[in-house]
Image: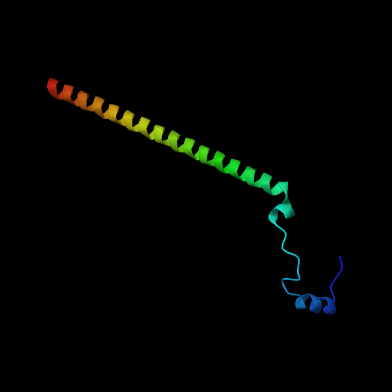
Length: 88
């Protein structure tokens, strides 16, 4: 790689933006790799969203099952207490 001396740096600093080549686009720089990375990112994001949704649904179902079991235990306990008080 060539190094620039003071004269080269001075000449470069005198150039205006109109004299310089335009900045290359991301497509020119990275080409298909950028598109592949974007696609992979979108797929990963969708997969993560699906996993989070599944986990949320699973947690919700688990909590509902626990709540139903608790209600049944309480109802059973209430019935048992009523029967005890009826026999007492």
